[in-house]
Length: 113
Length: 111
Image (tube, rainbow over all chains, first blue to last red; front, side):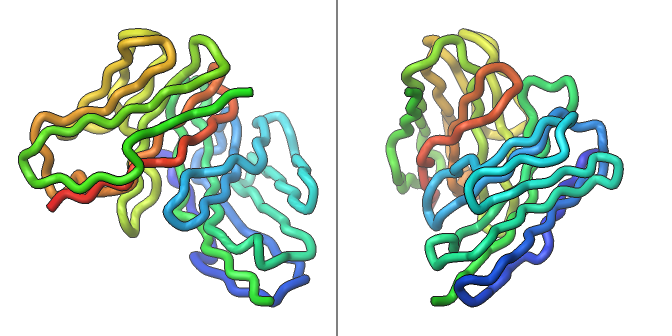
């Protein structure tokens, strides 16, 4: 059974700091991995999607990496800003499945001005 | 561009009452559609997904059901709500097995 773990559960950093959020999964047979952002009481915003054949994806100040063999992904946020404060969720799609995204419980990020 | 709508945004219902949550997608055809639930202190859980009209797959046995009466409409229902049905319900869509895009969610409180 695929399990997704995100560590730490919460993180507080000063503005301007570079930071890394971690995601690990137990079964390396994934189709893709997606990082989302969720603001309080809101839906999920897709940040980056990495296909199983890719090693990393970049969007602006965000960079996500994937190491399938070790079951790990990281989300790197450069020069953090107070507006980056949110919960960040990692989810893996099982190989060959039309539906199932397995989510971690998220990392709640607070960036202090 | 594609947009996804959910309503209502918030709902307070007594135990034993029926439920109907609606999700619609614009700007795409034959999307895959999904219902997720996010309960306090727990991760997002996939409840149902659909790859076409009338085609519903259930991931978790529960008090809920889903229907897809039109290509871009997905409905989550219950005949009798339980306290444990409280949570944040999110609808999502994708083109095939690719990137999923989420709606704004419905906050359901069962009292």
